Image 1: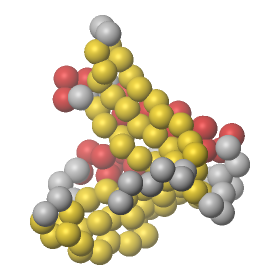
Image 2: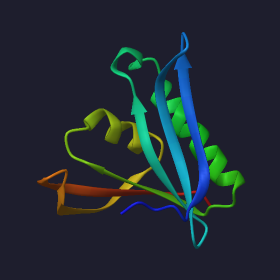
Image 3: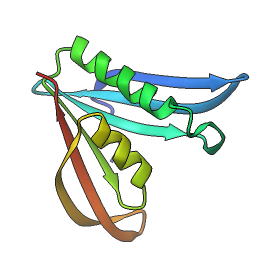
Length: 114
């Protein structure tokens, strides 16, 4: 289901006029932010771009008055999960769900901001 009710912000990273990364924060009720779409083009990985995007999103969330952030991810993304853990996110749940036509774990991670 498409969620068009959230407010927030999107960040795009470009190199040589080409999109190489993005992320977003959706502001949810109750002073909660949701980190969305942390994507980095394979050619731009390993340069700290993902970290910079997430750090920027965290700073925005603090300025927006969020008390906590959450994100949802799945298995098979160890670099992403490691990045989130290094930035203070912790796994709070993991449930098997049908994602993209396969059963996979939906991993929810959270970070307290206040």
